[in-house]
Amino acid sequence: MLSTRNRELKIILGQLYALWLREFKVFLRERSRLVASTFTPLLWLFVIGSGLGSTNLQIGTDYQKFIFPGIICMSVIFTSVFFGSYIIWDRKFDFLKSVMVAPSSRTTVFVGKTLGGMTTSLLQVAIILVIGVPLGINYDALSLLQIISIALILSFGLTSLGLTFGSYIESLEGFQLIVSFVVFPLFFLSGALYPIDNLPPWLSFITLIDPATYSVDAIRNSILHLGTYSFELDLQLLLLFTLLITLIGIFSFKRMKAV
Amino acid sequence: MIIVKNLVKKYGDFYALNGLSFEVNENEIFGLLGPNGAGKTTLIHILATLLKPTTGGAVVNGYDVLHNATKVRKSIGVVFQAPSSDDILTGYENLKIHALLYGIPRGTREKRISEVLKLVGLEGRKNDQVKKYSGGMRRRLEIARGLLHHPKVLFLDEPTLGLDPQSRESMWTYIKEIVTEEKVTIILTTHYMEEADLLCDRIGFISNGKIIALNSPSNLKQEMGGDIVKINFIGDIPSTETFTRFDFVHKVELEKNTAIVYMDEVNSNMHSLIKDLKGVRTIDYKKPTLNDVFLRLSGGSLSGDSPEGGFMQRYAQYKKS
Image 1 (cartoon, each protein chain N blue to C red):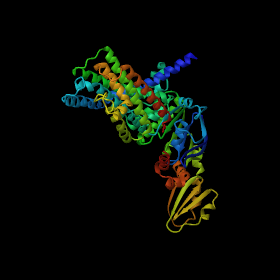
Image 2: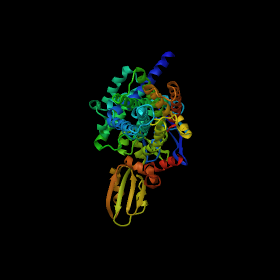
Image 3: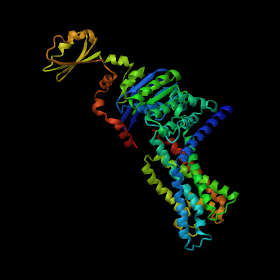
Image 4: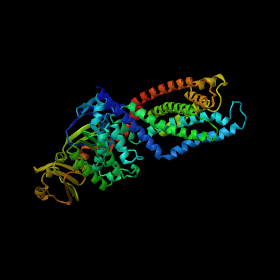
């Protein structure tokens, strides 16, 4: 009994590895994707960071440093959610069908794909972290561990969100359009660009329901010691959100039409 | 190997499949023929557990497609109509990923991958990205992929669609080889009659979601009523009786100034048939091909009332969603 369960587990792990491997190889071979998606966060970091930074804001630190955690989260938000569009590509070619007809469960397919998207985001975060060094951001082992964990959890949740959209939307154009309505609010309302302590009540409320808020706050806690909430609270709320959206994602994947 | 019983698939008010029943024997190549939108692909999707039938059911390799989907999936390999390999990956990588998806254990994985690569003649190109493959090579890679896990049944949805005549012929050779080497039952859909004639042990004609004929290619051709003789006249054509008075004539169709005569044994009977005819311009004779069978069977639906490309089906799906 145990050995059959072991074997089944081994097969599922193999399936997850296969799905992840495919996304990873595709990502490695399409380097233009990496360059293009790293460019936007850097643009924000340098142009907005330096531009607004020169206006003497009362935020307790250099503005460029202040938005650095937000830019990390931004790159995660964009890459992760837009990763959902690849499921539409897979459906356009019959690749998805060929996966669906294999004896792997939809949950496995969903998680495998999410892991692939997560890896993509993480590589970008790594690039941005390196760029942070000459900007005067100091990391230690703990803060690096914290940043990477937060980025991983956020990207798992948001890749799930993207895949959820991808499982309902049939055209790439539709996906771009609808996802823009999600991605930009997620970013702008997260407090990535401004402190969330003294916001008007209506805005304050919206930032509270944005999961990215807690990621930005957690990373800000970690490297700038400037958080609004405690790191632990941020982490818990983020985990809760990720769990919720993953469940929704798996549910959507299960009822997605295969053909 | 496959038993299909009263299969119905409805999209809104449109019946893609309308009470389909047939059986496929072990180790045969079974051809599914029919005009576009007849329901061939829908049928394959149901048998491959990708689509649920509205009513009715099917059993593949002893497993019910509705209640035992995972077991069915383990028993089948599918090559879809549209290309389904990832063209950024190499041929080998595509196979490896699918070997993992099917849970082929590490010990036998590599051996099996080289086996199927060899079977479809792609060992030399296995480390090239699939986007550098020709259409025929891509198809062959997908067939290799479908065979990885030793399936009992292999579905080929229009395996030679869009291939040049040469690649098509080499594909036929590969398909025949697969049946003997892998001991697999093949279900194949095609629009190419010579392909069906050459490859298939039996053929099922689907039209408007129903099987309207099921037999071996030679029997189907025989059911057409013998050889076909077309006689074109300069002036008026003689009455039907002129032809039907002979025992060897099965049937006569008269159009304008052409008589189409279906008869046995042209070689020995032609003389009696035409010796009394006057004003004959040309005589044309051929053995019936599967193409004639197809045109006869699909009748009206080929020429008009069922729109090209399964449009009604898509429209019905669209309306439903």
